[in-house]
Image (tube, rainbow, N blue to C red; front, side, top):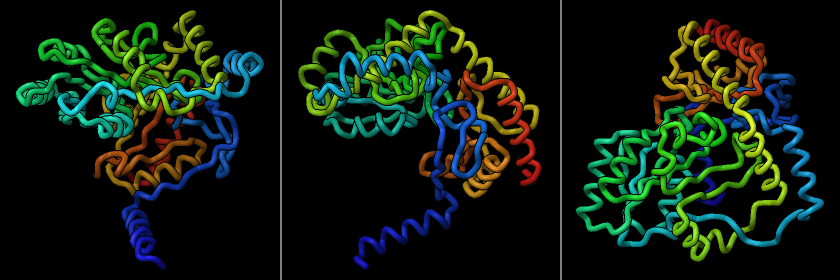
Length: 361
């Protein structure tokens, strides 16, 4: 065996020994609130980004089918946004929250700007990093943050960020992938939730979560930024377009959400109910009001065993351990959907209670 393969096998053995090995489960049905898996059929799905339950909505499916008749299977063209490399050069700076999603981190690494990192939602540290960037002579500064931090469900302090951006003449970039469609009074995301819609300069997000659960994404920004991206963004110029079916279904999703806040209201109602019932059972939940409800277990082996037993009891959840979360912060990350019924949630709560008792936790 080549030495590189020997080293890779040793690394895999170490992952197994640490208890952080992830077994992938195969889902054999569409993404409903109850799904079939190869391990067990008819389980309640508490591990999906399908926040509004729209992934199997008949009107979205119809819009996708109609798009094939009008636009064909693909557009055989290039259209996708790339941000940091286009906007920022060696003389610029990007200031990023330490808990930002890996996609933001990787995007920042691709640009030549000087990088600064501030503690999660810590405005004093953000101020210090902005001051350091200005003192170093940065011309353009972008503050980059998730609207919602996906492992914890914490919501970014956008008012504080925008205030500091004004003070230090910086742009604000928010990735709202875990918020668009259901956060804010009308589901317009964390800028609406915080009443700073006119103060955020760049919004990025995905169509692969609340907006139907497909794939693809977007960059929405002030007009000069969008125009520059169209002219200079390498991913925009050299990668393939989002398919017509995804565009058509996403547009229909937006139309449905503009007509009613019922789904947005339901997902939050469900999340409040689930959180309250779990707290009665003594589970350690990270505080918040987002439909991401992390159940903290603090040990990788316990988290994986807990998830395995939950599936046996008819509830699909996944353990999140290092390196996805910091060591010692192992958890079951539950995600509540508008598609869940009260019966679904009650079943899940009973399963959590039973597994907790069986494992003497």
